[in-house]
Image (cartoon, rainbow, N blue to C red; front, side):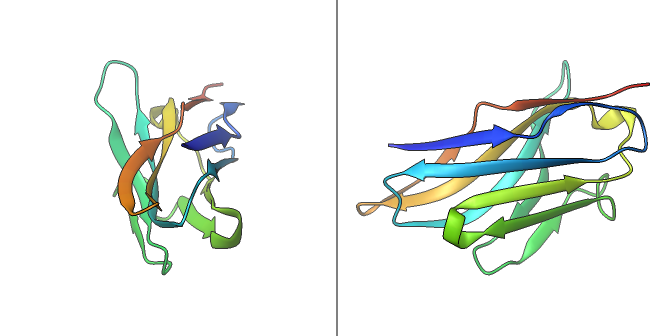
Length: 119
């Protein structure tokens, strides 16, 4: 069984910064892609940023230039540095990982962490 545990959410004023972390633990042979998604109130979950195990990244247009995704493969951890935060960034942020273990590969999700941008 594999678990993703997110941390780093909270309340911050517009223009501020937050850094989210997501650590994977359990029986893991390898993790290919990892990513961050968010779900604002009353809307569907959307991709924020994505990173492959080789370090290639993809960003939503709305966060490009403000957010940076990175990962530490040795620690099975992915990070999201969020700068110049806006009220519209308010959402529950979810970590996602494509995990391989014992010959199987699947997508798994963290429990989510609340990010609120408000003055």
